[in-house]
Length: 252
Ligand SMILES: [Fe+2]
Ligand SMILES: [Fe+2]
Image 1 (cartoon, rainbow, N blue to C red):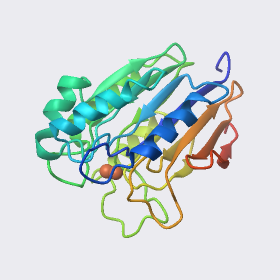
Image 2: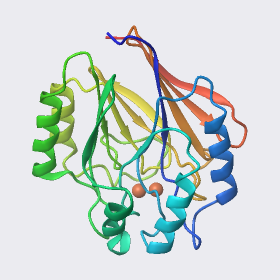
Image 3: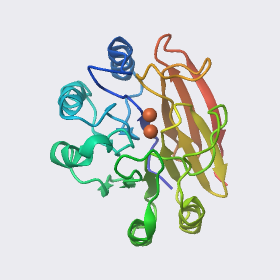
Image 4: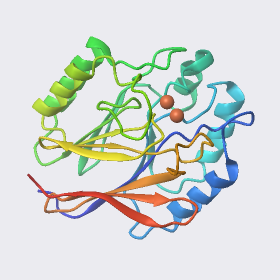
């Protein structure tokens, strides 16, 4: 049981660049929307594709933009961040590609699902073992939150399914066996929330990429976890700041 309510702002797929699919004005509007949230988020989680091409000018611009986020934040690498040997700059500017972050109320495990110059994702056996170890040593009473870029289950409204994690079956089994509370993902540019057993799986749409799908425009998610275990997932439309509740999951 948590001692109070917590809020995660879940953003993804910013695709920051000077030469491509980045809409800077939407990004700035998104930052303003984050700034004006009430209640404020306890943490911002970015589920990858921070940059569009993984090149040095993209990362430099991205690091400059990230300075405007006034909350603590963590970033998972996406397949676009891995392009052009981009993971070396990610490591240099943001830190390790796989890591854990301890909050008083939650354990975040961030995993590097992309591989260099491929759109497909996989965690592989080494990260699966790491994930099991971290989850197994998380003290009871802390939320377990797993974060990576590629999706673990298919996302509707996002076209032909080609990029689900290659080892999704094994990873899903680890997630369910360890009663993970939340899995946060991106990649598809469509928001989605679903529960399997006791685990809520959430995808964020794109925050500031021009490559949207149908009428799913740029947005981010708010995930409100109540002390009674309820998890509410809300999408915030960046243009209108309209908040739409996607799902509200009562404690199982
Ligand atoms: Fe993306
Ligand atoms: Fe992606």
